Image (cartoon, rainbow, N blue to C red; front, side):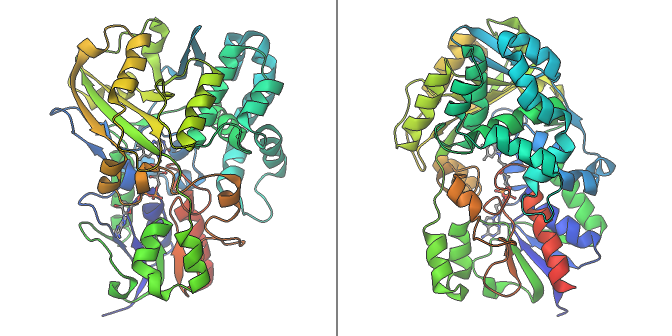
Length: 472
Ligand SMILES: Cc1cc2nc3c(=O)[nH]c(=O)nc-3n(C[C@H](O)[C@H](O)[C@H](O)COP(=O)(O)OP(=O)(O)OC[C@H]3O[C@@H](n4cnc5c(N)ncnc54)[C@H](O)[C@@H]3O)c2cc1C
């Protein structure tokens, strides 16, 4: 058998982007995927009723739309289309709803006396989003892609979100909005660097928008697979890799896996010190996910929310911080901070005519088996009286179901491991090329490597460039 240039284990966005980049460089590539359908957490399935297409994992894709890797690959040539809702985000708090508009100026107007501070932070970063995204998503680049933008991200993002809220913003609606953005970190909001999540996601909303993929996130994975195959690469599904020894001969092996699976398939080959490090890898809290098929749009009290893609539900900055702190300590909040997405507001192809889908999750302790369906629905019902009457069917995924669906979602962790500052500095090891494993020719390209979670494919892109350099 001829030796392959590269084998990629796992067909999530990072694995597929890595395979695409290597195939574009003329390399022979084989992707092996455990599931029957490629895409990892970008898969879309009809889990409620026929004709309702639900994104089981990622659904809002600013990171894909703004990713230097996706832009370089040019997936629009493979038919990928993004659809933008009228407004990226609405935050429902105790005082009503606050909108994050595509325009920073309009958002500043909405935020009243916090408007100027908003324009100085997320507004400025959004105006420079290409350089900001390149810097944040390729953080080990030497020299940095854009020093001024990187320093600005550090200035606005290195403090805990609670600190930014106390020092920078004055009004509670702005603070609740910012706390909700920062809570995407899945960290307690008093933790260092949580502001980065807030300013970066807000900047993307202004610079790129928060779109969904037409037809579902699966379209992104399908476009990548089509591209890889058009270049002669192979993507084989239904093939769970159990050991590195079973892989075909290859000059490079790229693992789109998290430390737990890496230990399972490469354990004996790993130097003992590094294996201990992977064994000690800290996973983040998990998510409890619900998808609904609806017979009509969500009946929001505030009608402006009808045109919003993502809706955050959290009464106040304090209650959001308390909800995330409680989860980090192993508890279950009665009134969890909820992230909901109405994809059909931007992409009506997801449901039969006149019908809608809704996607939502809240954070729960890693591996939790606590049923949060009622807590999530109660939050939505309070903001949209009559919501429950519109439900035709629901599909619920606690952490164990998510992990059974995709082994990388350990205990329901959607980011490949905690994104606290210590694990961000050593993801998964301290090095200028931290994705190079201490086994010759083996690399990790998943969200457990820099730049961590999200559907940007940059883990795969960065690793592919290292592989190309290593293989000469
Ligand atoms: C509920 C949920 C909501 C999310 N929301 C968003 C969002 O809105 N926007 C966003 O940008 N991101 C979101 N994310 C995060 C994003 O989906 C992930 O960060 C991203 O998919 C990580 O990509 P990856 O390639 O590293 O891994 P994954 O996408 O997890 O892919 C890993 C692949 O490896 C395969 N695999 C595992 N073990 C083996 C094995 N032994 N052999 C072969 N194959 C194996 C798995 O089956 C899987 O296909 C969400 C994730 C989830 C689960």
